[in-house]
Each structure stands twice: as C-alpha cells, then as structure tokens.
Image (spheres, rainbow, N blue to C red):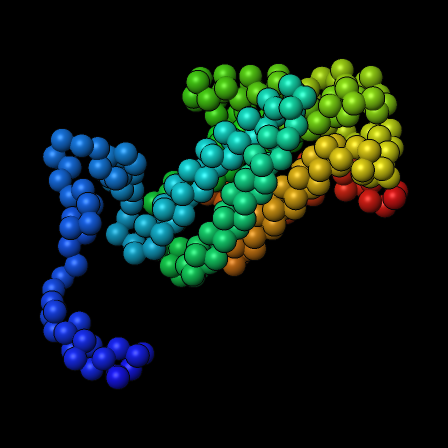
Length: 296
C-alpha cells in the first residue's frame, strides 16, 4: 500500500492517466459558445463600463482617481435604491423588510469606507500630476451623494445650486426635498404605534433641516426602556444608528484622505476642502437616537 491507503499500482495509474491535460470546463456542461446567447459581459454591459474612464492627463494615478469615484457612485446608486425601498416599507407600516435594506446600506458604506484605503495609496506628489486637469469638477458636486443626504434628512436648499445647470437633476432633488425623509417616516411610525410624538414634528416643513426635539428624545426613551414591548421600533432605531455610524466613519475617512493628499488647500470645486468636510462631520442625521442614550 502506498500513501493515503492507495495501492502503489493504482496511484501510478491515476498519475499517468492524463498527464498534463488542461481542464476543459465544457466536458462538464459549461457553455463556451455565446455567439447567440447573452454572456456575462453582455449582462453587465462591461464594454460600456470599462470604456467609461477618460483621463484628462497622462498621469499614472488619474485612472485610480477616476475608478475610485466611479465605483463609489455605483455603490451610491444601490444605496439610494435600498433607502428608497426602506422608506416606503416604513411608510406602509411594514417595517421588517426595512431592517434588511438598512443593514445592506450600512454594508455599502462599509465598502465605501474600505475604498478610501485604496485611494490613500496616492501621494500628494502623485495627485499634483493631474489635479489641474480636473478643472472645477469635484466630489462636492455629486448629485447622488446630495440625494442620499436629502433622503436622510440633511436638507439644505442652497445645496441645489451646484446642480442648477441640469434641470433634470434639480427637479429630482427638489422633489426629494418635498418628500418626508427616512427619519420623518420613522417618527411617523412611532406615532402610529401609539407613542406620543409632537404634532409640530409630525407636521413640520419637510424641506427644512430637521431640528432636535426633547420630546422626541422622550419618545425614543419609551422604546429603549421597553424593547420587548416595542421590538420592531427598537430594532428600527438600532438599524438607523448602525447606518449613521458607518456614514460618520465614511465622512471621517473622507476628511482624513483629503488632508493626507492635499493638506489644507482649497478643493477643486472651490470649497474649503478639509475645513468644509470637517463641518460635515458635525451634522447628525438621527440626533435623538444618539441623545437618548444619555437619558436611559
């Protein structure tokens, strides 16, 4: 007997059976002819995606910069889809499906966080080789990011101005400003479940920035004091906190990456760069869900 209990002659037969024969997946039924069928590349429109990078310079690192931002926009597209569906589910009182959607959005922002690690391989010297080629374009002008902020409740009509040259985008963002935010719908669900939420909060001008309210803290305190009784609301609150946690980390990593690459120079879009991004760190999306922890 040889190794692993296989007779010596049998082992030799196995080794010599098909020496150096390349594996052919078609022998196991894998399709290899796509002349009249949809292929992987067809399904994903890879030709369009992989030819959508148009560097404006010969700098090696510009491709990294472009792909970093294009992939971020793709993840944001999915985040918008999931936030929209979660908000609709909460509005309908069907909160359980929203848990999975919000968990997915949290993981999307975890993915976006990890992407900063790749961009940080670009040094200040690398960035200066193509920065002038960007002109006034800037991530500050991302309409998908602006839509996400509006959907979450960080609403500022002044932020429509960078999109004024596009009537379609401006109309989309204005429509969002007139729609109750994700957090507005969560507070309305609180009320629908019998927890007292002030009328001026429930009927507020949803296009205006949300302002923290002590009575809303008290409402969430009821939920957190009796999680077994209000389990769905409790779970919803924690899913929102999870999401904002990841969102805050994404903002922080954005600041750190920008400071590491350009220091305190102004951004290409005219903002203060790091100073502008640090202001964004102060914004709370779901303020009472953080403040209720002190009250418990």
